[in-house]
Length: 453
Ligand SMILES: [Zn+2]
Figure 1 (cartoon, rainbow, N blue to C red):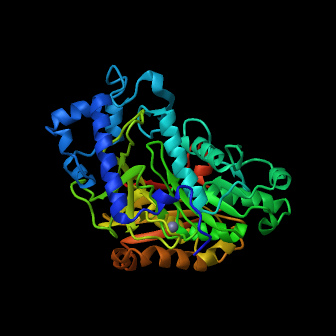
Figure 2: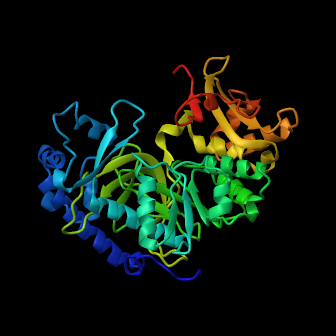
């Protein structure tokens, strides 16, 4: 067991029964707050003929409808005259955030200072569980601004007495590493891989830098790409999962799943039809509910909010780190899941194939994949383009075998289709900078379904 330290030991180590009782108590407080302050939920209880006083324990949330980002967009300007989800007076609103929605109007989120403090508490716990203390100096590469992640981590650092170097992006000059000797960097897997290549190109061995750990988040990734990143930098890589809606979960040093701060946010995992909870250990949709303490103000209260991410509850037992809060697998974007002959696969499965250890002697890790219709009706072709350090000096057979073996291993239903060529994987090898996504502005889309139906 690692040296025992916690940010909020009494609550982080609560016995399961006591933790569940605390959650139930906060579910009741939250529902009361919704009735008193949220125009949307007041209406919603009436419309769905729900007596809010009957919502006593967290299992009762199952009797309530599930809402989504679409629901929020439909209850804010320009579709409604005011913000139906706004659940605090303007005097209590500290910031207004927008989520960069992929479709239409961005969702608006109102945060009170109390919300910011609750969000920061979640990251503070997560940082401490990853071994951070007031001795650390952390470069934050996540962007400040409308995303809450970077600001929340900065507030969390204040609680811990850590120093933050708020670059907000990963293209800072390598002298930053030499001058400030940061002990950690927060960024996405790909940004940190690119940063590493830049530093190495200037003649510094990554293992010789002051960096002791990396914290990644912002998008899901394959364990294989994390392993490669850890190998490149010669230090552990910890995962965090956060969103404007208030989920902030983090891995501890045990790397045994992400701890959900259960007293601050409630997470249920639903079946795909959003009608029932799935048992622990099974994959489903992550649905969250804000949890409030008596007397706190919340800017955008959410009950049964579908994050459109999928996850699995790994355990509700005490972790080897001593924390009792449940652990989940790294959530994946439902929007990045595709179906081929009744088998689901995610962008992360493609990424895992790319990052096979032997492949990485030739590849940079940058990739993109496209699904096309095959030449015969019903056939499916997946085209995977990978960036190579030097496309003329690679072992194509090795790359293709390793990729295909990894991809099919977890998709046994596709094996027969791969055999009879109704599903085929073709590869393209690109020079540095030669991928389509590298020519497009904005967030890279690594998996694009270009099939006709
Ligand atoms: Zn743990």
